[in-house]
Image (cartoon, rainbow, N blue to C red):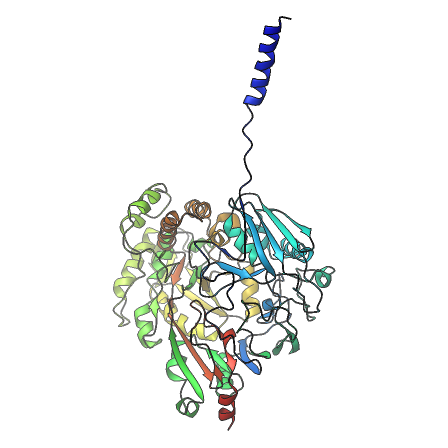
Length: 607
């Protein structure tokens, strides 16, 4: 062969082969840090000594007695059935811990450092060599691997769904554990930072899905010291708790012991508080706050009664439709039933004008949709045209407003027009389906007698529409079990508050998570799915996140999946005057775990 031709052919082959190969990509730069923030920078520097909302010199000691309503039958907060003791999830420490005056910022606890690349495809947690379980055995990377797999394979289904983006988890050595993700996701890195770490030697031979009646070995500051199943549980602070002097824990966990006494009835529980049987009470019933917190102990300062304003995001507390029920599939029916709740009358006559009507799934945040959509929102809304209610384009959502007199005839007329359009008519003073003559009758599932009181005016107004509402009061065990099975028409419940539209919304609203009970209303909607997907894809794009959050709020509210109730941007708290607390309250919490027993006040109170 001619050498020139041979050389040309060789060059051609080499060029053809290697020319199709992409240049080697440099590995993204790895960040090794003491903290991780979802957006922006952490407030506290690497050499911080304590959070600003604690008193690092707070004295340790004493007993804090609190209360709970209902009962419990085990100590396993993460079981798939049963009712766990209150605060039993706090038996375990997490890899890192979030501050309570920032949004989504984590600092060292079990993990003393975190390492991850700029594309967020993996994360390595560096375990503190001093970290110990409550039985003094070291916490290792193998415990972390075990914990994640135990939660994933035997825990509640929501965990497996949420963390399905984790490709692998492995112990690199005794003190380093690495999680690899299928795609880059910084929010997932923060979620993994909050992973509770279990002692593998305790849980290895136990079924994680089942309730646990023995006292577990944990990794947190407190363990169960005494209990009577269903009646009380006493948590004792671990004397040699390894993390007590870490910056994230200084000034916290100041009580030697915390006891929770269980009461079956709210009235009995309140009388027990006034008698001094427990120490602190946050009130969520307006009538009680206005009428019952009176008497000599309040007047002479033995009991302190305070309203503490805050701007913490508020949950969508509501009467929630099960949209899988035939009655509630039609948006017009859900919209009509909303007219039967006369908030203005209830606020004046039942709540002593203390509440504000909730109108958003992002109440008290910048993501609450106010006014008409802006240009960016309209652009996103138009991409969903035909899949969303028409009102989102040119109306501002607001729950029905009355004059507060109790006369809601104008609202009821609007409701009847909607019901007629949906195929329902009045016949013999009953609302019936015009095709089948089936009457509209449904059940509101409740677990608290206090909720029954606020449901009665709603029930009476529905009766004026020809609708029969049955109030079904059950105990907490039945209530939880029926929610898990979605065996209800309507419940008094709602949706948790969100500081921002996080990736966590997938498990609440996306149709792929429909079989999991966080989706209370049973929503399966392609437009909602698209918005949730957009939120997941834009976690680091704050401008896009603002648009997606507000559009999601508009779409959810105008679909009327719930009958919104009300909120109060204050802590209503009463406590026996034997405690002191830091001068600064954590921005997003009442901060009871930063309080301490003031011996001088306690002596004076005892006298």
